[in-house]
Image (cartoon, rainbow, N blue to C red; front, side, top):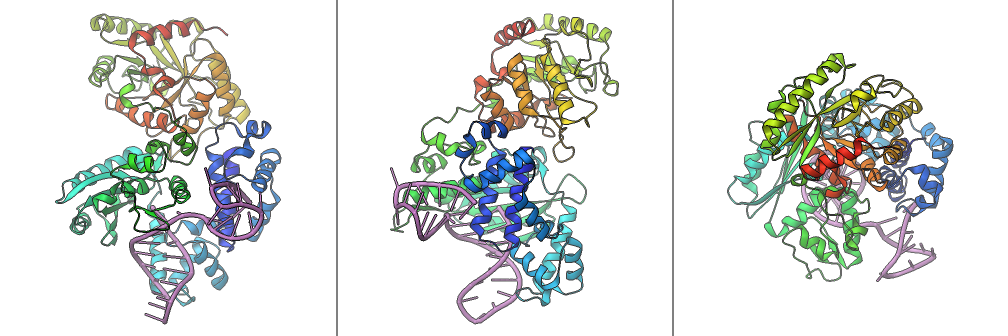
Length: 584
DNA sequence: GCCGTTTTCGGCCCGACTGTTTTCAGTCG
């Protein structure tokens, strides 16, 4: 069984145990183990084989045995037993805001509620208010919560989150008395998708800022409005979709603690607090306070001082997932993460020769304005007729055009001739080798037949990236975040093959893709695979999506040296020349 | 169920807010 599925099963087991009223720490152990599985440093099967799985924090003797059983047999009697004891619709109730395991248990026992439909019917019939511990207000909130579930798609993409939060941040910073303000939460950690928006500010008098915030014209509904925080719903990009935005205000000497706290992740915060306790301090969102002597506090002006007080190097937000950052920060082995300014150019960009909006000249000009030294054009290949994929004749025409443009640039900037060449169903490529040999680089991507079996798809991609003319693999799983699932593929096998054949793997930086993801990029680097960050731009504006790719690279612990497109133009050109002749 | 610089038992992160309650449980982040 695949790792993500195993993680999901452990997570569900934890949840079912919660609903059954089990010891909360036992439930948490299941959730913790599920989280640990999601960011494993290597392939699970490999880690079972070499014994390293036993060393993963949060996986003890019992859960280790369960994981091995799931991985090898695909079954777990303990899970099947829990499932049999729980109505299948019960866990869905947890998604209703304000409804947790205890309320579910109570409602299930009192009213035999087994599903969202049951819950709605009971609330509409006024049954819920009669249950002990519930009242009219709770009943109304449950009905509203179900409605909320139906109008929010849940999470949103980073580009949408940024567009929504930017004016809020600007507004808060402009308020009288505001000293500092930052976006925190998952957006600051650059998570793939965002649940809600968190903004923090410091001020001597936060109250009026909340008053002004809840009356902003874009606010659709005020969820809460107190003296330390306010929550509102903002209209999302999709019709009838709403996104929660929380604003919090603290005194300026609390700002560092609050910023760290509200940035998360939850697992990282728990790790920090545990660490604080071990050093005799209690950490909350306001201060570091002595456990024995509450008058003893450690003031911190910024997060760097907070980490220092904990005996740690500064941990960048992208690494705060409790995935090894504490150990690394303690022994001084945190990587110096890549930054946007390290990028010298990029590949895999489309022009109006295929399905892009801009001409070659416009794309080149756009890249130069962003300070890039080169741009790799990568229009679609002939099979992708829908996207005006280039025929071999048009490829030759485009090469002539690029040669002419490069002559004009006079060595100050260069367009690389490339193609986003389709990987055909059998793993062969959409252009013959003699044509491929004429490109400066080739990115190979799957655009068809997504429904293959995992074995077939894996073999298909491995065959393609084994072709010595292929420089890099494009969007490795084909996923579209929040809208299309990845195709079935064994990424660890693909990574092995990429390492063997010296084929790079792309971080497709489009906020709709972010593919490969950070967990696998981290593994790929460990295996010696070079990563390249490409925007898959279909317009000049699309070039700026590179920043999302840098976010993925940072979450993958990558440094400047791990990423191909950080070298100067001459070096990039030289390395592409060498790779063109790569043999096996 | 996990784990150990109070180490094999007895802890396990912390505070705000809400609603149902006269002192607190549940949920959320």
